[in-house]
Structures are given as C-alpha cells and as structure tokens.
Image (cartoon, rainbow, N blue to C red):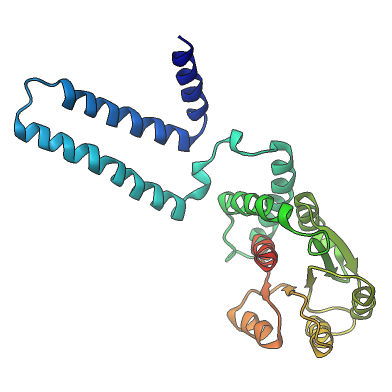
Length: 251
C-alpha cells in the first residue's frame, strides 16, 4: 500500500510541470507496449516486431522532440513550481518587461518577447549566486539616470548592485577606488556626443580590462562593430540584450 502511495505522490509531483508530463507519458506508453508484448498471446511475429521497434524507437523520437523544444522554446518546459522563489522571479521580470515595452514603442524594429525576458531572468538566477559580490557591482554612467530607472531596478532585483556616475570624470574617480564587474555607459553626454568612447579609451589606456557596454539609442551593426573595435564588450539599445551581455561577461 505504501509503495502505491509513493508512486502516486511521485506521479502528482511530475504532473505539475511540462517536463514531468512528458516523462509520465513516455513511461505510460512504453509500459503499455511492454505489457502487450508480454501477454499478447494472439500477436504474430510481425506484430511483435512492430511492438519491439516501437518500444525502442518511441523514446528516441521523444528525445529528438525534447531537444528541439530546448533549442527553440526553452521557456515552455518549466512550470511555476520550477522556480525556487516566484516572488524574486516576478520582481526581476516585471521591471524588465516594462522597460522592454517602452523600448519597443520607441524602436519599432525592436522585437519584444516575454519568453526571452523570462529566459534571461532564469539564467541570471542561475549565474549570479555563483558570482562574487565585486563582480556583481555595476557602474552605470549616464547624465540622465532617470531614463534607466526600470532597467536598473531589474538589475538590482536580480542581485546586482548598481552605482551611478553622471560624468566621465566621476566614473573614473569611482573606478579608481572601487572594483566593478561591469561598466555600462551611454554615448552622448553634456561633455560631448561620443563621451562613452572617451571613457572607454581612458580606461583601456590604463590597461583596465573591466567589461564595458554601451547602452545608447542606436543598435546598428556599424555602431556595434565600432564599439568592439574600441575595446567594448557590447553595444545595444535593447534592455534584454544588455542584461544578457552583462551575464555572459560573468561566465
């Protein structure tokens, strides 16, 4: 009786997520086919051969479909119970979605995807706990920090500590006394239209290798290539892309 209860409770737990349902379905179908093969007295040699091929081939087919899901639709494989802390997940996702919606309105070419944002937040929840506090510290350089309030909130809710600098000189002064895991900079400021590159040059000339990311109004290929050429690790105007770039720099 206790064994039956144990099986039932395991099945209930598995049924709570898409991955568990796939596992239960494969197990059930293979069990039925195996039982039929074992007790089917009226099955001919051809029927038995078909059942054997099915028992062997069906899990392989499911594996191929699973691989496709992982590659194309990873967010569909998880249920709410897969998240260790639903509240922290939503607190990080909500401001990211808000700022991405605004970004899409300002830039029609920007592709807004709730699935992409959710996948990014989950990746951050895996990476950030393994990262040292120093590497989770970000210096954000922008003379209009109010424009990035929601995105900074998303970073903070994921476990980053964001400090703001309003100018190139303030950024250099802060960096001289503090270690940062990444620097995010706008491009044009009161000092000049390409002040992001001025800051990047000043850092690289001193041999400073801190990952540097441009977060500005353009997402053109030419501007991305120019940023790489000057020593930056990325350039974008899309919130989710920025978060992904910073996360990749932590690995």
